[in-house]
Length: 181
Image 1: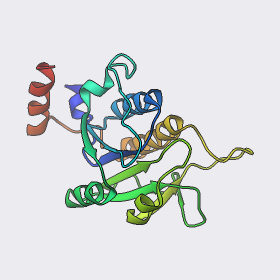
Image 2 (image 1 turned 135 degrees about the vertical axis):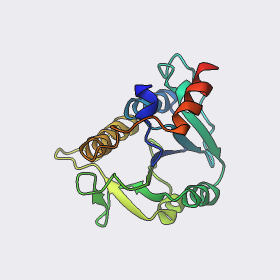
Image 3 (image 1 turned 180 degrees about the vertical axis):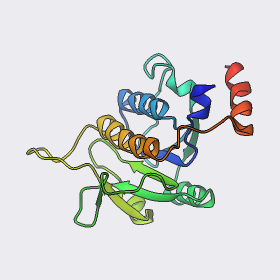
Image 4 (image 1 turned 90 degrees about the horizontal axis):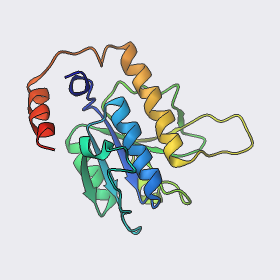
């Protein structure tokens, strides 16, 4: 019941064209660890990598996956559910993850390992986020960046009591679904 009650239905991750199955699997694990119940896979030109339950530590089994083939349908779906969308990008107008309010209903787009978030997805986003870095290298591995971002979101949500809620009707339904897996 603890894991079900900790699900953060107002926090969402979008993986855009990430080609390395190990990165995708690691992101699934981080999402499960902070209680994200659903993620979106946005693959417009990369082939969706085969993700096994073994490499994702079985985390994929506990997270609902929604697949999209174009940016507009992904963003429209998220906005219809009330999400504000932020791309991860190092630009002058990006907000540090430490200055951003992760207690709002937010979806974070993480981009391809080599190209980052696409221009189309970035333009469709409501804003940009970045992970502050102090060294010469100005980017992290996408799975590491995801973990850093998600744990900052978890820290903020913990301080606001987001993980201290009682069982809801959705929780009972989720337990029933999980028991079938």
